[in-house]
Length: 160
Image (cartoon, rainbow, N blue to C red; front, side, top):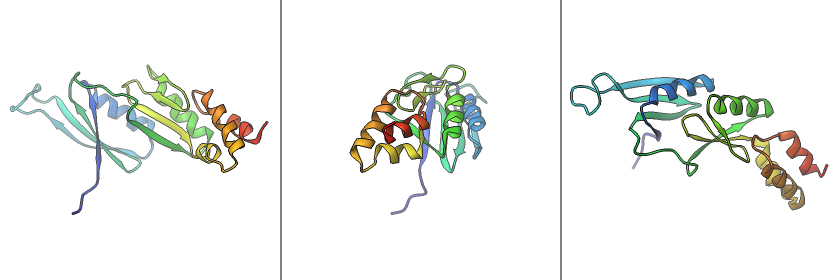
């Protein structure tokens, strides 16, 4: 049995096209695909957007205007593997702008309610270090943060 891959469907309440435009502005390696619109068969107004296909960093998505029945929760989030603090700062500021909400330990919700983990790759190495004392210090430092401050986690890891 073979599959053609996976596409993540994100359910929006009438804001699918706006969400896609926002995500395309945040992520450099992204692009828009097909836009499907309601036809005479309905159930939405003829010509209004049903779905918008898009891709971010090679991951396929479809944004669906599904209505108010379902909303996003932290049970599903997207992790952004950041190379350095500059990338963390970029994604954090862009995804929290205009109504996004900061959480803790590098988690946030964007203005559409989608949860993101803005994670420097090095963080996983620091909190997963085989030196348990160093890993514990790094983890404790991370627990005090909203946006990850990689330099502060490094200092804690080093015992400074």
